[in-house]
Amino acid sequence: MNETSGFPDRSQVQQTLSRAHRSCQEMELAGLELQEVIERLESNIRQQRLKRLKQVSSVE
Image (cartoon, rainbow, N blue to C red; front, side, top):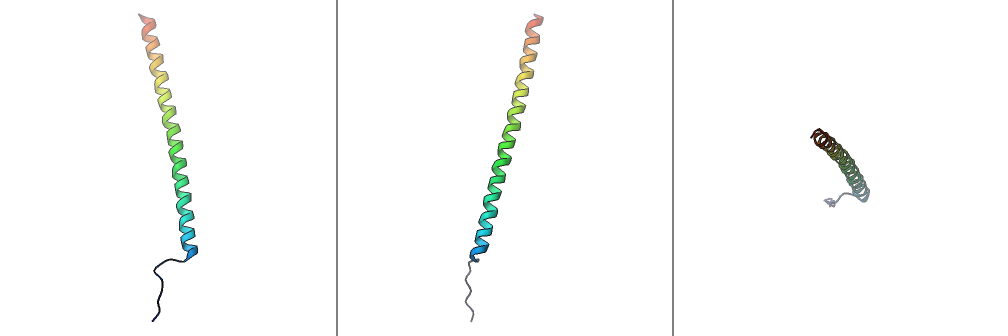
């Protein structure tokens, strides 16, 4: 009877860990890029509001 270990070999574990690490880095990068886009949008919204408020105050 052959007894085989239920564990994958070392190279498979290393490959899986490498892929998982790369995936985590890619997710972190995507999160940071998304955060930058959100910050730019918020800045644009603030600038538009400021412009509108200045126009309203100059009319009065």
